[in-house]
Length: 432
Image 1 (cartoon, rainbow, N blue to C red):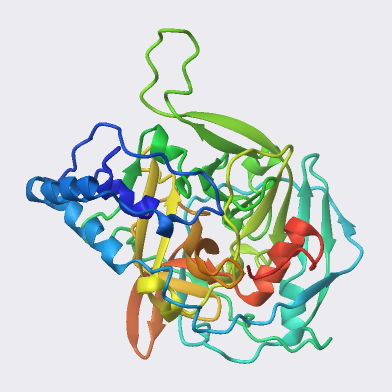
Image 2 (tube, rainbow, N blue to C red):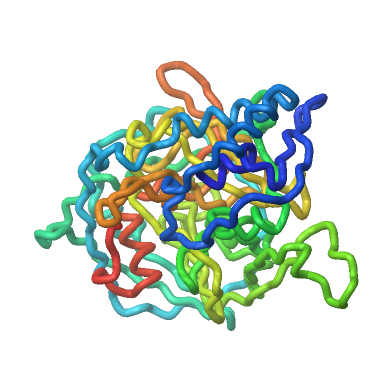
């Protein structure tokens, strides 16, 4: 049984849909403890008959549980066999000597959400890449805690030593669009994550706050992925990036300072300073040319944390994700102090973006978008980060104007870049 499904099934702490007239009750704690580890296989956890009987009784009283109960029957099976698509070859990034840059002015204003417009000129599927532009966009800036900066240019090679790699981007710049943002689609499908068991349970425990107002996801003991626009507007770093910090939620029961003192109602946030920040050059091209394709950044902490983190993977085609579903948890601005979880199917995809209608509000930007990816080494389905939630985009293709919430997908090239940022070499980078 999956932790996400357990929100409804196990009833340790019910989530609360915000649709008017509908609410799910808070239930008492109970049930077995689940291991907080990224290597834990939730599919091997078998529910007890008494638990399932209790869950079915809940359906008669609380209809809001029905939709999530159905998820369990559609969840991937450990006997489903290996992933149908072959893993793409992972390229190598060959960095050059970092070049010193002038110190940042930190003049940009923080923008918690962005909206762009894209038409057929920037919506690409499977086309060849412009190799010169590719190496330019995969170069990256490094911002240090003292405000100094460096630029690192790179060469990109496949296993044969040639720069001939599919899956990159040559998208034309997205043009800012003035139409009203539509980030909630129909009934609000988000769920608040509450209670010690859920807040500290994997995968919810991998979500962290960014001091500029966004969300991030733990991808190693020292590193956090977030959206680039949370720290940089395309021209300069935002004011809050000068003293950037990452916030770890501490459950209410742990945040009790005196014996006998009642625990606070909301989690406490423990802040950790960021040592350095890395942003792809594909994002740093000026605000008039901002494209969501490279809306991701990696933060390196001053010291390691002890929580489980989620591993990265190249984003598979949506059809290869069980139910075509993606998931992410973030700190939406309309629910202050709450961690909010949601899931939905991918509606469309391009070389670099995942188009979907997962409900989200400002503050959720930078959330780690994950799916269940078949792990050839472990021979089981594993949750892995396959993208970063960016914002909203109006897409005009074949004369139709559609609006989506958008996540940056990790192509083999982006995976290689982020993996180099984390490990500093290819040897420690692999799909599994």
